[in-house]
Length: 115
Image (cartoon, rainbow, N blue to C red):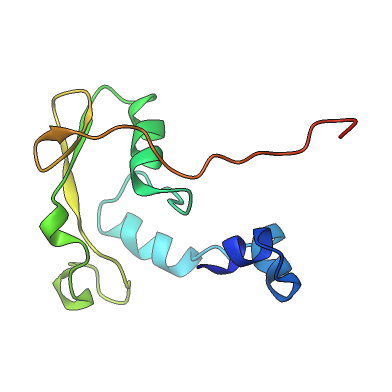
């Protein structure tokens, strides 16, 4: 369980990780310098996040599940701890090993006014 999820699960010692996440600015700068043009927090789930990105792009995304995760040394950006898990593809959709991947992940349930 990550820190934000721990806070949502009632562990008050992790509350700051939920309400004040720390962005990885140096990693973002290094990835941008290496050619990355988009990045996204996927803490709600990889599939759901890829479907979110699908909604604003004409391309698609192909995940290669055998590459989850790779040793950090296989990623091409020095100083950035990350894992390459797939590629952008021409076909509009999200795929895992060639099969359509449904949009599943953590769905936030924020309290509505009056609750």
